[in-house]
Length: 136
Image: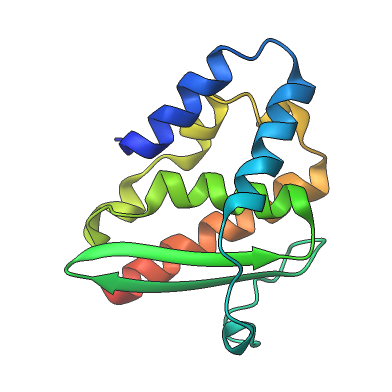
């Protein structure tokens, strides 16, 4: 069910033996992402439940789901980039069917994130799912 972009991340992670290399890769993915327009950093796009500040803005283009996001924490920005690879481009009706937890387990993220980061990641996934279902 994962997109080709997400499968590419999975393949990259398979070549990295050390968690610190994977952690740096996630941060690099976040650094490569375009920043979210300041005008979109409003209470309606802010994700509650995250230790850091997080904003997610979703659109539907030609039936395909797309979201952009930003955070004031580099690792969280990287997690947003990973989630974008997981969800962006899917038909909006398929977003809710993605088992994000299982897909992210393929990266080994769950055992290396603090409980606060894991809670924030769950909050982001829930926001993505809710937004997609509202636009379906």
